[in-house]
Amino acid sequence: MSRVGKAPIPIPAGVEVTVAGSHVTVKGPNGTLEHDAPEKIAVAVADGEVIVSREGDERSARALHGLTRSLVANMVTGVSEGFTRELQIVGVGYRAQSKGSGIELQVGFSHPVVFDAPDGITIEVPQPTQVIIKGADKQLVGQVAADIRKVRKPEPYKGKGIRYVDEHVRRKAGKAAVGSGA
Image: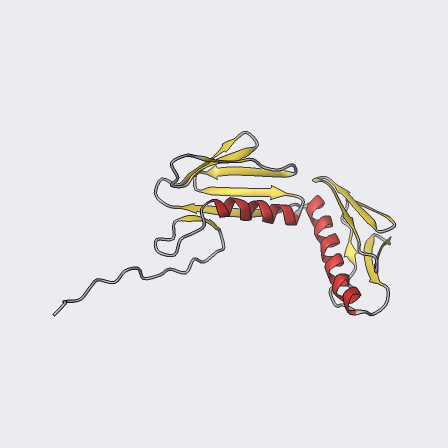
């Protein structure tokens, strides 16, 4: 058995998990998430826990067992607590501001870049150099953060750009001074 896959997922108060065949639906205070489990994986709800099991012991079934359990656990956590990703903007004159449901970034281009948030994602700008992405779907929160970071990745010489808060940017030395040409 997969060590990750065999661990049961506790269902917190206020969260409802329903399974119809291979279709898993999780409802909670932060919204509703859905997932279709692969053919060889079975999902069941019993005694306030979600149990993920597999048919057979083939390599593909073993690989999907832990994955499906992690995806369902992330759905349960997402609808109850939600997920957050923070970005930091570094650079002189680089800033962000809220614009409707999305943000407007000024990161050294001749024009501001407008980024609209997809459904289920909220983007907050508590400071001009800080962006917080929140949502129930862990994969979507991470993808939106990666897309915003992609607008201006941190460069290695001065470290300017958009980076994750916990990201370390490796710096390069730059052009060395030329010695005497004798």
